[in-house]
Image (cartoon, rainbow, N blue to C red; front, side):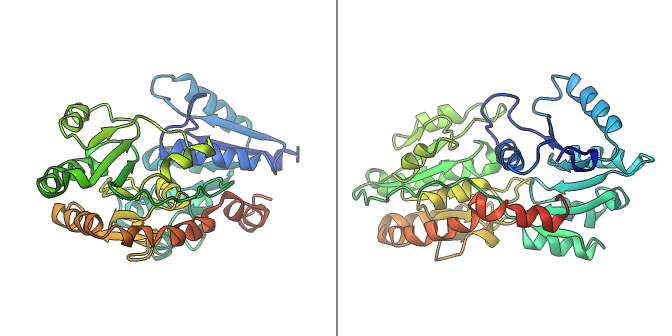
Length: 346
């Protein structure tokens, strides 16, 4: 597919040539690799760390002006996407634009008037992570939203071996206050009055630059540990996750969409204890593949974690259901030629 009309240009963070370490860059990494299966002429504009490298924006501008007939996939965060989409909307020659939405709040932004609806008239298709997002966009007059859930490449499911003894919780995401880490630490201190020898919590992820006291606080609690970053592009690392009993995800981050880490947990057979925040309730089935708790509510998190410590068999009975659920989000089931045809990329 070498004609200009079939040229695909994808714009978004991809890891900057290194290991993708956040949800957006990990997702885009998988999208790009899948697109290469179907399109010979693919131009990738990796916007990772663009603030430190203004030449990225210069290259983006040149590419946009030089390719009026190409098809554009915008896969940036909300505000960066808005700026690029607004620019494309102003151009005399209208491009074909597909907005592969990162996160879960842009539909609300449009509905609440935080961004201009008019700018999004240039969009051929919105590819959104949640069914509720498509419904919100429809209320705003956009009936061109397609539900495309987050996805992971799944080559095998690790075996779950009941560990017995100490219950093992894991946190897997960017380590920050808004991801619920403060609540986890506070609940751990309370649980330790009765249960210190019966559970542990390990944290995996990059620590936010302004979350400076995290290591000190975790190191002061004997059954909490920081384990660094785990690269789940290496399928063998799912064997590490499978050693745990449940994942903690009490997020209240405004930019949360369909967290890929929830699929990672399901692949490893881990029920997810997740806050009722943005799309979490669409993904985690309460009582079947995890538990939904009140957002920013320490008591709710404490109650569920205590119940799991007291009755660990509840979690272990959910492992098979979690792995079955993960199959719905296998990259080959989500990103395939039928999808690309249905949205008009092919």
